[in-house]
Structures are given as C-alpha cells and as structure tokens.
Length: 80
Image 1 (spheres, helix red, strand yellow):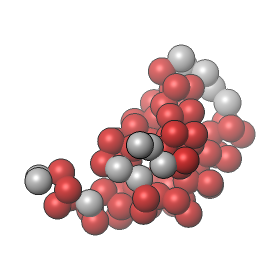
Image 2: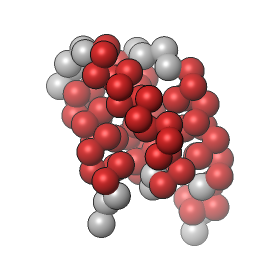
Image 3: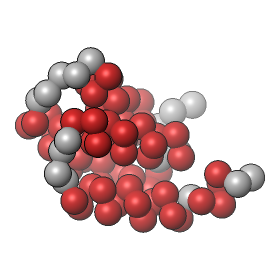
Image 4: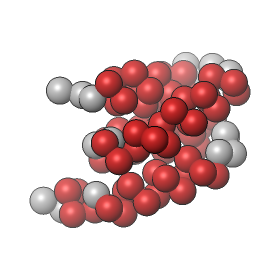
C-alpha cells in the first residue's frame, strides 16, 4: 500500500510531468511538502519524484538534496 505521501504528492508530480503540464507554483508546493516526508518514500517514489522534478526543469535544490540523501539511505533496499 502506498503512503499518502507517495499516493498524492509523488504521483501527482509524476502525472503532471508525463502530461507535460507546466505549473511552477504547483510543483514548488509539491516540492516543499515533499521535503518533510521524503524519508517515508519508497525507492520507486523517490525515482518518480526525481524524474518529475527533472522533467519539469524545476530548480528546487533543497528537494533534490533531500531526494539524494533519502536515496543514499535506502540503497540497501535496492540491492535486496
């Protein structure tokens, strides 16, 4: 079961990126909300969020640093 974070924030960001919808205020709101919840994301959720941020060309360096830190912390999950 997906957490509320993944079900709502990461999937919304991913869907907007797939549809090539550019809404900077929405992406910044998702990014800001994601930072506090990033540790609960699955590896797939982190990947989806990172891809959505890259696709939207959003320059939210705090979020990118949080995704990176969370991914490094979860690397053992990816190898099991």
